[in-house]
Image (cartoon, rainbow over all chains, first blue to last red; front, side, top):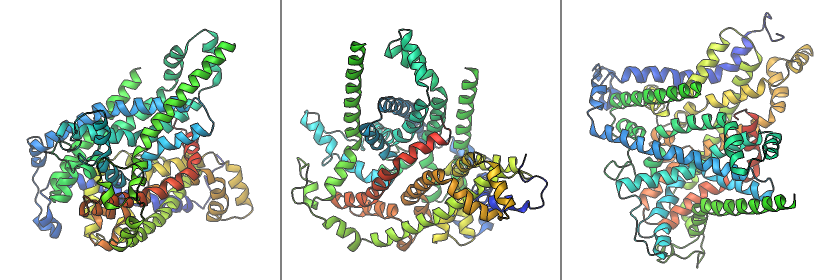
Length: 295
Length: 276
């Protein structure tokens, strides 16, 4: 209670928080209110030039969305990414963290860096590099496969394969940050827990499933929630690699919103789609919190 | 006991081998990028591909600056990085304000800050564009920089750290007659060095990599960042993979160097911020 309560200089706290809070209000709070309003209008390029061209259309954008095949396809694709990608990211980052936790010499430190690298690499650079690796004729991947006489794979030209190719890339990129979170949690487990389990004659597998994993449940919950939210907004990978093609086969909901908004300038329609995505994210997150509470 | 030690050693060897193999697989894209960046245009299309460049050349890198405007893109990217450090200072100040003062509306305002973390980027993208368009800031550097300055997650991490700074330290400085801003800049920033290190690196990486927002706001070539320029290059020189790899290497290698110097801070930072 020895904070500033009761003293006359209380303009200072506001001076400290003002710059950041004002920016957040302008660029997050006000925009979400605008987006909600815009989603009930037919705002487009004409409306951008002159606001009197904008008219209220009620729920039309929302009802149109659910009869728009492209939008429904993007929901299906996003579900595909989430259902396959999220478990893959969690399992791979947990496995890497468990292995890295085995030692602490220079080798383990170096490889910690190596596994983290993809997650801080620029997405356009990634697209350029992987575009070359995935190239059907000159790509390294198809060359390696040709050595064991497997035919050329059209990595980015066939809708389902393209989705899987993007998932591989996104898992590669997504391991780093989650691995660090698991690693921090693993290093927080007291050694005595393992020793006690070994005294009781538990083997490695039993220790993993009965000691380590249960103690990681907060980290796992955190990683699951953030990864799921991130993958529901899957955007950059299809945007830079395929632009949603072939035949909208890699189009995600987030990319749909971007394209409607900034390529076709249908701001009202895109805003409505963004709210549908927002509501889906809120529902999924709430369900997860509910599940974790009941445990 | 000897057999258990033996078993442990075997286990550790297996884990090490798995780690190394996985690590090599993970780094193949980087290795391939660096090797290809030094190959002449004809060699990258060779089949079967050569692993090491047979006629190493730096011509690709020269082209980035002569044929393309990578010099300008680099300058713009540096401007964005520097500006994002101003944002970092704002976030630190806000974190300090929320942690070390009690004032009217504090909890409500902090909740507001946290709430912004839950809003997906796609929801705010369009209205922010419309707002900036209203005030004539589209296609300006200010319009590119402003929306990204305040970061809720960063404010949150600063606040978490600042709460661990003892109140007595601040009180003592006040008794000595130090002003509030003097205390923040001369006392708090030095004490909070570890969290500044982590946030500094993450801010640098985010600024250096910034792509979508500059792409939306900038319509002039003179405002493009390195990422926007690289995506332009990918479109224009679709089959010149050597040039593309050189462009990618120019973006990625500085980050690799900075990261390998500071990686221990990043790991410590996550442990420190209490996400366990």
